[in-house]
Each structure stands twice: as structure tokens, then as C-alpha cells.
Image (tube, rainbow, N blue to C red):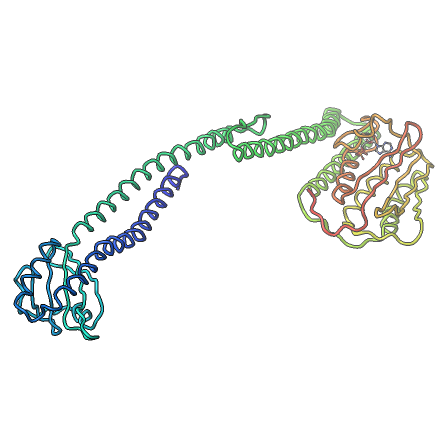
Length: 463
Ligand code: ADP
């Protein structure tokens, strides 16, 4: 149900409930009050008449006196015998008849009774007062009057409550319609703005209206900005990837075309072309592998944490890279201070990060150079530093090298088969562990990449 309808309906229901409650609660109280108000003077009159007629019971003057009282009060007055026989009636009609009324029986037992009865089309109020003599009840005075006036007052009141409530309900319904409109109008304009929202553009929905609506619009804009930024990154990434793929593919195409167009290709040249093809295919395969690993890392998943001996992990990286280092007579050493350093890490991911750093160190080291993998504890953090004696990285490139596809010297990097993704991936892995990678390097002074991660992670989700 729409807010526009729900709000007025709620008010109407509330008012109807209030009306019912008021009618059910107030009307009976008022009824009792009005009845008692009417009965009280008659009870007094009953006592007066009882005292007055007591000596006349059994006398022929009784009827005349009762008729006088009836006239004086403007009501009907009866006098009953202890057997409920009518001894006198101000209207003269019921004399000699028996009054079969429970209230009369009660009154003849000595208690004053006030009761209401239906009398024809009318409601009647009976006030019955016992006539006592020497502790005994020798008769009763019966005064009857109409309740019509009381019921008219009550009906009038009920009508006023209904009309009053209807008026209030109308005002409330109009007010709630207006209120609902003030709430729904900005919501509708917000909805329209959201529908028009285009991720590719930096557009925002207007922030106005009440506080809750402003918060909603602001939150939406924040989410929109984040999505827009992510969309930008995704687009740039796709452009970069296609650019990266285009270069080796173009190289492959040109080699293939040359081979196809050259008849009687010299076997030596053919070998060289095939080596080029092999090299480019390797590069493509490397790029695709890196992209695959990156996409796995991008996919939001929980870190598979386990307790890992970081010294052993570094040693495993060194061992697996040993053949590569050995080819260029590079000395790859693992050093660790003190006892084993244990940390809760995703072993597979951290291995990948260290492998990328050490692999870079080899790639950029001079033949016969030295590389150190140093593992140490610094407070609650573990540090794994990869140091090489390579060309170093200028200070203004320190941030850039961690960006995806960034290479300091693209042509040389191509020669080394680099994709520009290794450092980006390593940094993402460190961040996923609530850690970081710090680079210390100067041109010509070698480089040190230090992975810093807390040792006591419990559980984490890569975001
Ligand atoms: P690549 O696959 O090209 O190595 P990376 O993301 O691992 O991609 O590195 C990005 C760039 O950072 C490299 O192309 C290189 O220019 C520079 N770089 C990375 N490691 C080193 C290092 N140990 N010494 C010098 N330059 C480095």
C-alpha cells in the first residue's frame, strides 16, 4: 500500500477507534450520572410521601393524598401494600391490582430501589421507597417518571461526538494527505533521479527535503561515487588489458606475415622467427596467467588463514627461483633473525606476493648480483624484505610502480617479459592481510621492497 494512502487511513482508523472508545466509555457513565441526578430528588420525595401517607394506610383519604402528591411532583405516585397490591394510584387506574415487579418486592423488604424499565415506547425510571413502622415494612411508595429527556440528551451527545469526530477525521485526513505528499514528492523525485542515474557519468541526485531524505540522497550519492570510481577503474583496466594484448599479437601477426610472404625462407632466419613467436607466446601466456591470478584476487573471498613459518615460506620462494637465479649467477640468500616467525596468513597468496618481488629482483639484477630475502619481527608485525643490487627506482616512480600495467621502462620491461601486474598484485595481497609494502630505492642504489603484515590476523575478507 502506498504511503499516500496508508497515512490518512491510519489516522482515520485511529479516530474511529477513539470515537468507539469514547462512546463505549463516556456514554454509560453519563447515563448513570443523569439517571442518578433525576432519581435523587425523587428518593427524597419518596421518603417525604412515605412519612406523609404512613398514618393514612387503610384510610379512604389515602387515594386523595396520593393524587395530590402526584400532581405536585408532575409524576405518577402509587402506594403499595406489603403484598404489592396497589392501595392508591395518582392516576387512579391501578388501584386494587397487584404490581408484579421484582424491584417492588425488594423495596417491600425494606430497601429503597431505583430502577429503569421499558414502559411502552418510553423508558421509565422507578423510585420505590419502603414505608416503615416499628422496624417493619408496611408498604411502599412507588414514584415513576420518564427517562425520555435523559435519552434525548444522550442521543444528542452521541451525535455531537460522531460529528465532532467526523470533523476531526476530515481535518486529520487532509493533514495526513498533505504530510504524505510532502514525504512522497521528494521520494518520487529521488526515484526519478536514481532511474536516470548513469554509472558512466559523475551525476548526483539532488540533496534536499527533510533530514532522513537528505541522508538517503547523500548516501545514494556516496554509493554512486564509489560505483562510478570502480566503473572507471574497470574501464581503464579493460583498455589497458586490450592494449597489452595488442602489442604481442601485432608482433606475432607481423612475424607470421613475413614468414608467409617469404618464399624459400632461410632455415636460420626461420629459426629466428620461430624463436620470436615462441617469445611472444610466452609473454602472452605470462600476461594471461597474471590476469587470471589478479581476477582471482579481485573476486571477493575470505583469506585462507593458517599459521605459517615465514622463514620457511621465504626459503621456498628462493628455492623455486633458484634455477632462474643460477642461470645468471645471481646469489639468492634467505636471512632470518632469531627464532621462527609465525604468522596467520593466506600462505598461497603471500607466497605469490613474495615470489613476484623476488622474481622482479632477479629480473632487474645484474648478472652475478646478490639478492637478500630477510625475515624479521618488528613488534606485532612481521617484515619480509627483498633487496637487490639492480638499477633502483627513482623516488617519483615509487607510487607508480605499484599501479597495474605500470613499467618504468616499457621497452626493457618487455624484454624481461614483464606484464606490469606483479607489484600491483603483491600490494593487494599485503593490503588484504591488513598490511602494506614499503619501497626503499634510489636510482643506481638497488631496491628493497618490504612486506609488512600483522602476525595475529584472525579472519579477513578481501575487499
Ligand atoms: P613487471 O611484470 O613489469 O615486473 P611489476 O608490477 O612487477 O611488473 O613491476 C612494475 C615495474 O616496476 C617494472 O616494470 C619495473 O620497471 C619496476 N620494478 C619492479 N621491481 C623492480 C626492481 N626490483 N628493481 C627495479 N625496478 C623494478
